[in-house]
Amino acid sequence: MLNDARPRRLYRQVADQILELATAQGIGPGARLPSERDLAEQLGVSRPSLREALIALEVEGRVEIRMGSGVYLGARPPETRADLDGEGPLEILQARCIIESAIAEEAARQSTPLLVTRLDQCLTDLGAAVHDTPLAIRLDGDFHIAVASGTGNAVLGNLTENIYAQRLSPIFAQFSTHFEGPRTWRLALAEHGAIRDAIADADPAAAREAMRHHLTESQRRFTEGRLFER
Amino acid sequence: MLNDARPRRLYRQVADQILELATAQGIGPGARLPSERDLAEQLGVSRPSLREALIALEVEGRVEIRMGSGVYLGARPPETRADLDGEGPLEILQARCIIESAIAEEAARQSTPLLVTRLDQCLTDLGAAVHDTPLAIRLDGDFHIAVASGTGNAVLGNLTENIYAQRLSPIFAQFSTHFEGPRTWRLALAEHGAIRDAIADADPAAAREAMRHHLTESQRRFTEGRLFER
DNA sequence: CTTCGCAATTGGTCAAACCAGTTTGGCCGC
DNA sequence: GCGGCCAAACTGGTTTGACCAATTGCGAAG
Image (cartoon, rainbow over all chains, first blue to last red; front, side, top):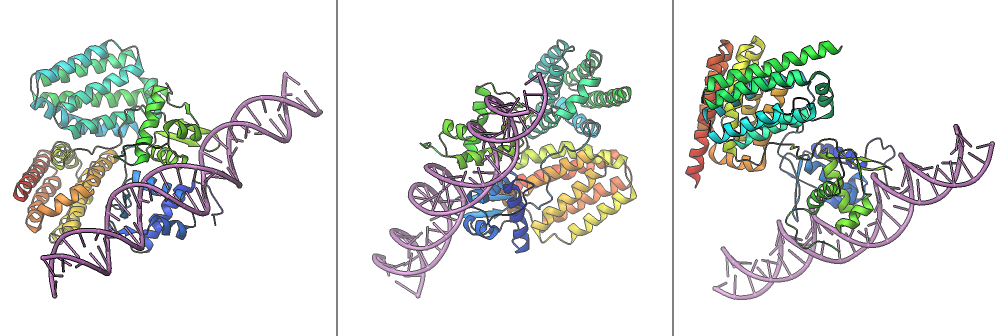
């Protein structure tokens, strides 16, 4: 009553089978699929296992489970991706250059003394951490997140946080510790200062250019460090 | 032997409790946490339920389950967020206004005939679907994703796709179908056309303004529809 | 001291219940 | 005849207990 080969975990296989079965039976997005008991029997697994598969699919947002009612196929098509990683650090830097310069511009447009105070705090923190790269990475992120939150838009704040979460991933961290040091952090600190000043002056164009300059320089430092290392 | 209150699903609560317990006991990233049986007993739930929580955490990438060995805490720090939702549709529109205008500007800077062709295709598709709101929502997203992919940066493309995945969520969809119709789609189509023209002319400033105008108008239509409905 | 193997530990899965919301259809009253 | 109400039939939610399979580590044999 159980399957033969098992390269992946059962709940993973079952999850895929459920999606296949749904499309095979012409069950479109939003439609209800068979009950847990029926599905378990059709796929030849126990209900707890079937349930694990459903929970995995629910976490991924591919199905919606309504208690007492049934399991419904998610609204979004199967090719939907959930994260923005998978790309190289350089590509992320390029994307940030485009996005964050626009964010800085908007933040300068809504400049407040409170925001400037927070940015100053970030600057002094980073200034005291130029010799501690792991800490500096975090504080660097705090500055950019502070700028984004300065727009007053929580979505932009979350988005920037997500981008920085990428940076804390193991692969990125390895790169960083190799080519980042007190010198690069001091340069970054100066560039941050320029951004801070532009926002303090409520000068959107200057803030935009300062952020663009900062991230362009970051790209340059990154590629240089990469070449240096190879 | 079971808990009293149950606002959310049990596996969700247990998942949170596991993370809390891990930090409380000083279990750092990469370290092993107690066995399933122990955890189930400590948290006062059955092993299948505990297991559902673990699978949810595994899908989210917060723990790693090694068969026969144990469950290990994920490498990334606990504050990492995975999505940018939780905010209202209007806030997402505002964020898009800032981000996508910068993306359109960059796309115009790298304008290619191929991109213009793709945009034209999106326009004709949307023009033929003004009476089919669900389809129009999808095609509208395709246009914006096409613009983002025009930057040649995959991160920006993925990011835009993610933003549109939000739009296909049930809550947003309900709003959309209420206040969107042939009239609003025709207006959006015209605004899309302006963006297309600016990109075809390789005019970054015009592309930026066209995109900003489009999303500002979208916000206006959204708030109007919302008022109308209440 | 090294090495091989077995046994304890851990995750993986299943079976059969019972509990708790939802839905639905039929019955009763209007 | 029509509409609202209530209960039975779903549906997901959770537990218990058992057994299988992969891993690991310790101890005995060389």
